[in-house]
Length: 138
Image 1 (cartoon, rainbow, N blue to C red):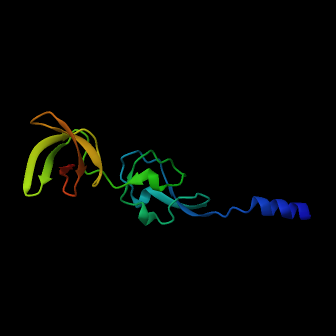
Image 2 (image 1 turned 30 degrees about the vertical axis):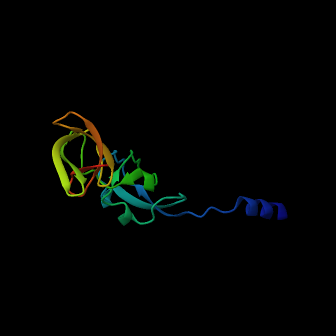
Image 3 (image 1 turned 135 degrees about the vertical axis):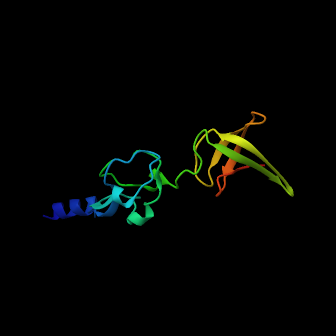
């Protein structure tokens, strides 16, 4: 009997907690709604406990039904799509230059993306701002 108690103590008990899981398969780049989620009692370190933390975010990878949603699997929805026309803005002190550009990637506010300047055909890297313009890094 004491052997069983020692083995149980060494192995420990794994307690399941309520974790947010995908209720259906969610494709990458799809915005997640409350109907897409369920809460199940499973063991998953790093999983979300509250569905409101996930709703409104975009799936960065394919989320399979019944599997936990983790922080690296989701992010803010993209505000700039690949091949979208955007405004490139370069600022230096009082100088502000704006030109048209074409996004070479997709991203959300705060992400760095590459953009082709349509006038010079040069490729630059910039950060997406809240209004969808791309601020060129110095």
